[in-house]
Length: 87
Image 1: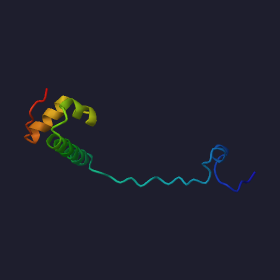
Image 2 (image 1 turned 90 degrees about the horizontal axis):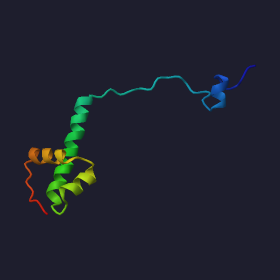
Image 3 (image 1 turned 60 degrees about the horizontal axis):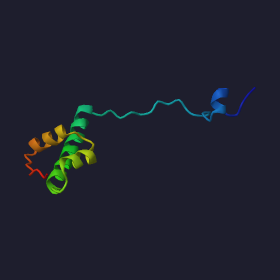
Image 4 (image 1 turned 30 degrees about the vertical axis):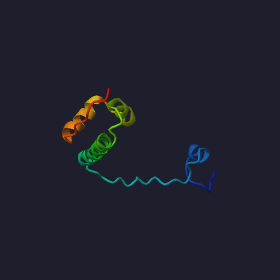
């Protein structure tokens, strides 16, 4: 039983026939450096929001960014940001 499409019967039935088994080329990345870069970009974006949106409370910023008050305090210390508390 010679078939024009290579592969097992399961592969032919499920649409995988003719797919080559070449491994994907995986680009190596420096994960610690990439995580540091992404975190620094996030920190800058959060600091910009803290500076440019004094009308937002910390609770609103927490909800918008999905972070805790601890993260906001860390960013405030890191960028030396002082905000008047609005009650």
